[in-house]
Length: 236
Image (cartoon, rainbow, N blue to C red; front, side, top):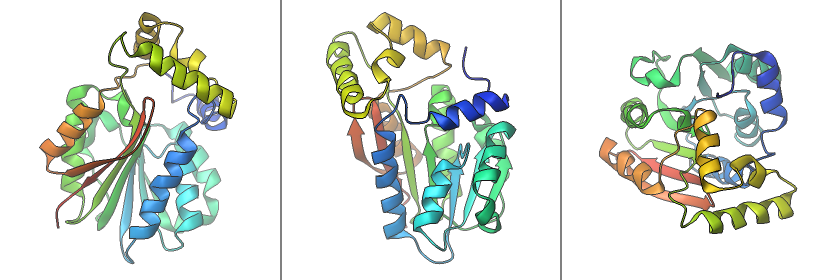
């Protein structure tokens, strides 16, 4: 079974341990915020699909003084933590409660969305819902806008499994994380645990194909093991 995001204790436990099994999260978030910082234009807004407990917003507000964000999340327990964390920034942070699996029906404040981000939030969607989400994001962005997707990828087969396992074990040695145990002791075990967590990760090539199909110009900005940071630019 996946996480019960309606449970406040589950939300707080995730918030405390966000880096425990994903040590590359910190570097990829730094890259993501650096891109936003370098490209931010006055008057723009950022849309965060899956804002959760507001960790990413805190990084953004710390580095982009005039940033303004609309955060979407389906969990009142997670957004309650976000409100606590971002008390000093609530004048430029709006929350919309909405299920990400139903993005085509999302009603947003009328803002000029220069950026959309999704950090570890869309791998919970089915492949069909993910493709729909990419099309929705494309429609929401201003011309010339940028979509930054940071998420986990599918481990394709048992042939690459041993090499991927070595990457995770190295991460655990370097960062003191628990990635290898979290991802399973064997390829069948990994596939089972991913399903039980309610995750539907897809391959890098599939992400890029679906983004291009929605109209984006694409690039992979960072890839480490099964974690990627992708960019989709909407033509001006």
